[in-house]
Amino acid sequence: MNRAFDERADEALNHLRTLEWSDARTARVRRGMFRKQRRRRVQRAAGASAVALTAALAAVFVTTRPVETPAVAMTETPTPAPFAVDAEGVVRFADGSTATPASADALLRVERHSPRAVEVGLLAGAARFEVTPGRDRRFTVQAGAARVEVLGTAFEVTRGEGDVRVAVTRGVVRVAWDGGHHTLRRGEAGTFPPAMEPLEAAAAPEKAEPARTRRPARTLDWRALAEAGELEEAYANLGNVRETATDLWAAADVARRAGHAAEAVPYLERLLEVAPRSRQAQNAAFTLGRVLGGLGRHDEAAAAYGEAAERAGALREAALYRQVQALRTAGRTAAADTRAELYRERFPEGRYTTRLD
Image (cartoon, one colour):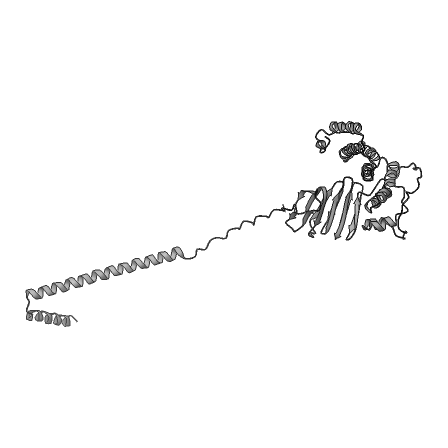
């Protein structure tokens, strides 16, 4: 192998000896060397650029590829408001239930709202309720002395000055009051509280049943008809009214709501005679004042309101104010002024103060 190399080296030297070297050839060789040198520099620069580009691409890939993030617990969706009141005054609950004012003087207030219980207060007027069925949630309407409990139904509650009327259009409701309760089903209605204390132990003096003009009686129970809201039928069959506070109040209510207000007066007067200490006595006196005033018997109305104003109960203020109005209507100005002054003393910040002047 060394011998072959030596032979090639000798041949190269002999070739160089035969070449004619000149200044021009030297210049050509030098230019060729410079060109080769430039090519090498360019190649080295290109190689370096390629390396840099590769590194840059790699960097871009690393920084832009999807990054796996650790699992993060999502925050709960904000709980919607439990209820809202629209421009029409309708209370709309999150579960779809609604409470809609049904009279110009209706006044509603949500007293309580939780996953298990909703309580709405009907402070005045009438309202319709559409309650979405909810097995684990109790929906209650408190209207004066009456408390209406439902699970899922449609009904209307009207709060008067002395009583509360409940009418059911769908489902079942339970109306409770101090001392009793009653269940109403679809199509049924009633005025509450109807339950009255029984007569006192001493027998009340007998009094003839009030005279009435009505259609021929049918063998139907007027109490059941009244509870079903069939007031005309109940009035037509109004008979066998026991002299208990319960029956007397119910009979007066049937006559009054059936459009026979005058027929309600004897029942109310009798109730005040036989059960003067009952819880319903103030309601009876107040209602008697309203009925008599509607009949134009303002002196008698003033006396009835005066009796209601002297009894313990929630109607004292309203009864005293109405007595003042009845006396003025009857032309008894001096008596009206005296009772108005009494009103101001008893209720210095009363709701009717500004109406007395």
